[in-house]
Every structure is written in C-alpha cells, then in structure tokens.
Amino acid sequence: MSVKIAPSILSSDFARLGQQVQEAIDGGADIIHVDIMDGHFVPNMTIGPLVVSAIRPIAAGAGVPLDVHLMIEQPERLIAEFAEAGANALTVHVETCPHLHRILQQIKELGVKAGVTLNPATPLVTLEEILIYVDQALIMSVNPGFGGQSYIPSSTRKIASLRRMLDERGLSQVDLQVDGGIEPQNAAKVVAAGANVLIVGSAIFNEKASVAENIAALRRAVD
View 1 (cartoon, rainbow, N blue to C red):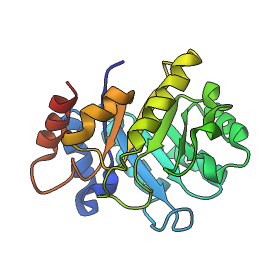
View 2 (tube, helix red, strand yellow):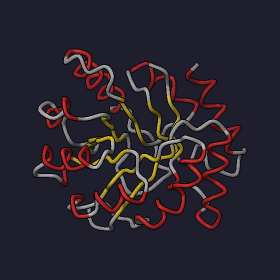
View 3 (tube, one colour):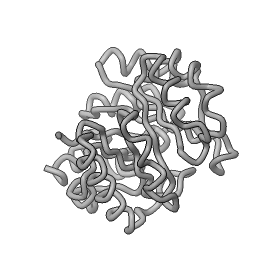
View 4 (cartoon, helix red, strand yellow):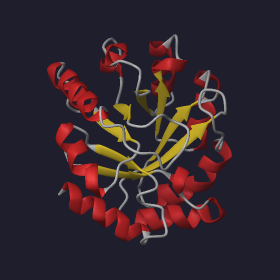
C-alpha cells in the first residue's frame, strides 16, 4: 500500500486558504485534511461546512479528496451538512459517539467514506468491534486541538498494534492514518510501524520552505 501525504489546513495561512490548498495540490498532496473543532470536545474552534464548500472546487478540480475530521461533540448533527459541503471522507471520535455503529452507517448512507479515530489516551480495544465497518482508522499522535505539537513516542507502538489488528482481520485495505507531530525526521518510523496516510500540518505549512518543498522532503523520508 503506497504512502499518501495529507496536508492539514489547520496549519495553513487562513488569510489565503484557497491559495494554500492549491499549493498543496500542486506540490503533490494526495488528500487535503480538514480539522473541525467545536471548542467543547477540544479546546479550540476552527471552521464549518461553508469553508469546506469553499475549498471543494479547488480539490475536486484536481481529483484530490477532502478528508474531514470531526473533533466535535454530537457529530451526527452535522454529518449531512459536511457531506453536502463536499467531504469525501468523514472521521469521528470514539469518545464522542456512544452509538458509533449507527453514526458510521449514517456516513456511508451519504456516499462518504467513514473513518474512526481515538485520542492518545484511549485504548485500541475501543476499535475492535467497529473496524469491519470503516474505510479508514486514525491514530492521534498528539492531543487534538492545536497544530505544532510534538509527536508522542508511544504512538509508534499503538500504530503497529492497530496495523496487526487490521491485518489479522483481513482488513489491510483500511487506510491507517496518523495525525500529529509528523515531520521528515520521524515519518519513516511511522510508516514502518504500519501507517499509510500521513496527516501533516506545521511541517508542510511553514515559512522555512515552500509547501511543495516540504511535501517533497516527506516523500524522500518515506521512500
């Protein structure tokens, strides 16, 4: 399974968001990752369906999917709105979904890929009964809410354990995503543990180099 790079617009310059999304696509992004935060489940607020709708033409025109990560309480209230806005995939947290199976069904009925994620302190056992219903599983390697955090070292073991769980269940087609603190210096380790989608924010959107140069550095690191 080839490694996909998913720039997270959380770390982009929102004053020129459309331009930054285009730069990421031109630089070789496989996916555009969109973090939705409500100020309740995580201590930050970001954007809503209108912004997803605004960047959809840019991504769709290049055939690049929008991967929307719902770090919000009661995500079922907004799933239809984000799907209509242009999300190609919607990921929800096990911590916010007491009826997780029902919510994943709701996502799939809208013709959108369904994903599930968990915070660093949440054990993998919470995913055991639900993996057969998902298209992607996301390991948070930082505590969600803010970009620019450092990778939590114990995440590597968690990634490897989830990869084993997927392979043992014949679910190797499920994308194993990792989000938080990924940079060229640790990307190869994350991929070696079993991840095939790297969600990267501040290591791509920064003033040290261009977006394209930063994506290329990540490619070299994992290749």
